[in-house]
Image (cartoon, rainbow, N blue to C red; front, side, top):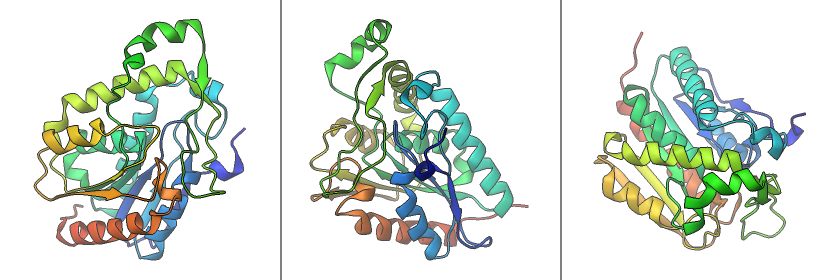
Length: 255
């Protein structure tokens, strides 16, 4: 059963510039809905899908993998851009940032720009290299959800971290890292200085290896990993409005 707070979201005018919004691993659309609603209120056509295995149970997530999550967001991007006749901006948190980068690598003609918040494409924790075997010994470990500085701001994510799915996510990271030079879309990347889920290596790889000319890297001093629900949320939302409006104005459509 899907948690009522984890439902997908779509909003904004049908003729608005399209934006696809993507949540993170073990999270749900709940963590991204305020961002999506902010964009919709400013005239963008917003689609926020629920990734397979999310918003239900960690056990259900553990029988899905990165190809399932990517197929979901790819389908959403193709449907949105076909329906509007315009390429889309893509916003992503954590693993949603990795999926956004993959879309930009695979469909550069359909992505106008990327707004990424604490994107994860690499983890330097040495335990990651043993996931291949640890997942055979135990199905899950304590969860990573809820890394928010703001009091009483729950993320609504899982309390367990499913290891088969986490291992699959690490394969997504490897694919995205390999193809970083293919990313040419304008980039706006936010990184929290206090992030208890992701280290700084992902953002540094994005900075060093992407080919985007139009790029901005911003630091969030008051928020933890789930910054879309934290003290710096308005800064993120307003920055993405500026980016997506700017790139939409110069993006060609197609028929």
